[in-house]
Amino acid sequence: MSAVLVTSRSYAEYEAMFDLSELPGSVLDCCAGGASFTAEAAERGVDAVAVDPAYDLPPAELVDTVRRSLPATAGIVDEHAASFVWTWYGDPGRKDELRIQAADRFLQDVAVAPERYVAGSLPELPFEDERFDLVLCSHLLFTWADKYDQDWHLAALRELIRVSRSEVRIFPLVHQGAGQPVAYLPDLLEALPEVSSEFRKVPYEFQVGADQMLVLTR
Image 1 (cartoon, rainbow, N blue to C red):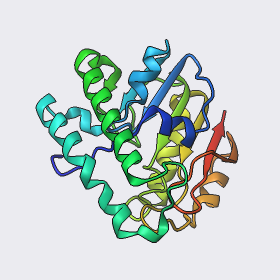
Image 2: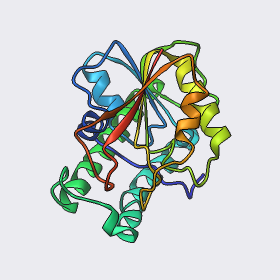
Image 3: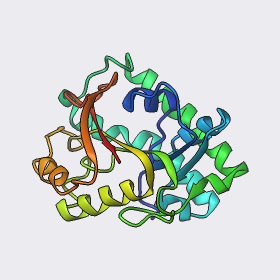
């Protein structure tokens, strides 16, 4: 577990990645890492919960992992520089500033409200059916399609749908790094006839061409 990277994305990034204008009564962030979204959503009166396997770490180790991940996650961008654009952030410095602020806010909140941060991972989440109005999943499904196969993705999608009362939003829809499309995405959607699916453009692009989210509606 100690070698894992725990990315700290900001509330502003979530708003843009998932095209959020207002939030429903309850929201799950899966897998949330060190994002500040749950803390800031809770401040707005939302029943917000984050789930991530990293929350099994002892508190001191979680702090260390979040802090260590801040510079480490930049390596993917550096390795595939031509596959990223800075239109939304403006420049690397602004991105770093947002991530540092998000990490600080996350670490403050997990210390005072640990009940909002639940240890767990796809494709089996520790929540009852239809627990959340909205389920968000960023930079896990499709991003790591070279690590998790089609069967895993189908099980993960079914689990996100199971714990959602209304809607699931997933971003982005390409592999990490170079940003190739995921060839089996259409097959996955065909295997989910119980939900409607929509590809929706969002006001965020960091990886070239990764400006759409998948919306699944029960």
